[in-house]
Image 1 (cartoon, rainbow, N blue to C red):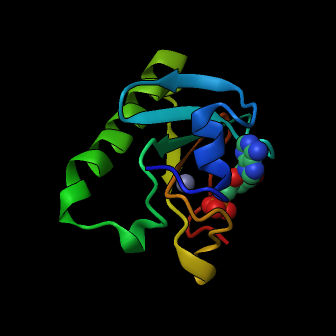
Image 2 (cartoon, rainbow, N blue to C red):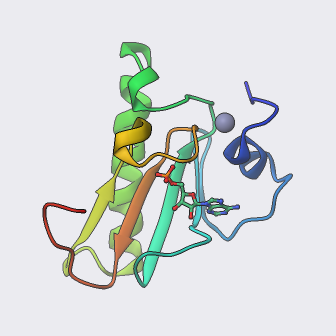
Length: 116
Ligand code: AMP
Ligand code: ZN
């Protein structure tokens, strides 16, 4: 069920344009509008979930799917071997700005740890 004022629900519905990378029945992947690396893709569930903090056991399969799709995109785009980073910013201190759960898939440069 989509939420009326949610940016990513609108992107999933096609009401706001996006650079589509991949989609299936459970998720939609598109290029981040403000890339923080040469490749910066967002993978979002079609189903609206506010954040990782709001996900529950009923969504465990969906959460696993988002990670496996991230890995599949990395292999298909050819950067899996070099490496990449997946990030799920959660709530204010986690740096979350859009409250529709999403996985950042970043690649194309080395990343430091811990992140800032
Ligand atoms: P977060 O800060 O983890 O909530 O990530 C939200 C991400 O959404 C940021 O990296 C933004 O650059 C990205 N973003 C915001 N609006 C759009 C948009 N219209 N299309 C694609 N990415 C977007
Ligand atoms: Zn949403």
